Length: 324
Image (cartoon, rainbow, N blue to C red; front, side):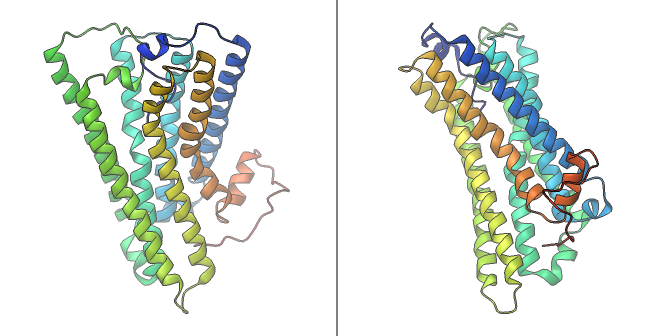
């Protein structure tokens, strides 16, 4: 995920000096409050997924917990980077590297987990008799471990590349720019690696989701299939694909912003940054809570009760659990 509010200093320098301080403050307040609200909802849903044994013993809920944990974990350093960018605060290179790597290590967790979740839904509909033996608690844990291992390999490659870069150019512990992913990985070699890695990642995950969708759609035409369950799984897979497209769009947005910044004014750039930060950086990381927290009839009653601090919601009445 490219962090939309962290552009390079040469972009910032090209912006107009005039600004509407009140509007900028309101935009920043809206962003921070949005992140805090989504962070609270995700934390409550994480607590909900550990509140009952059925959530800890079902593969799709275990995968959902991993997805939510990665998204929630990323919001903390992402918010810190946003605040640092807003106030144009510069921090030492080591501290910046720590914050950026925390974000990078979790940015590929979501798409990889979405791929595993899509395959799990495919097996649940297309191979219902074998689902319990294929997606056990043990196998699900192994899949999650592989997802995190791939993410850490991405980090290790970036660290080795960074060390190699500093063997060629002198290391400066004091950053001249404010902390961002672009400022940390400034060498052209990182751009080439980013393109190859992002393309491979999103093509692989996209094929897994689309393949699962086609498989479930073909099985849904069978007379012996539960039409309602298959239809709900198709909707979930489609939402996964939309979520993946949002993450992919956000990863390419930094280049577009740099091009716009050469001609647009500072206030216009800040407006674009804030809007895209909400819809392309925050929203994709919070769709899981909406997809599963509100649509899943097993989670929804418990989630609403926890959100209301123990009081049952009259808007979302208690329903009998239905598994898909």
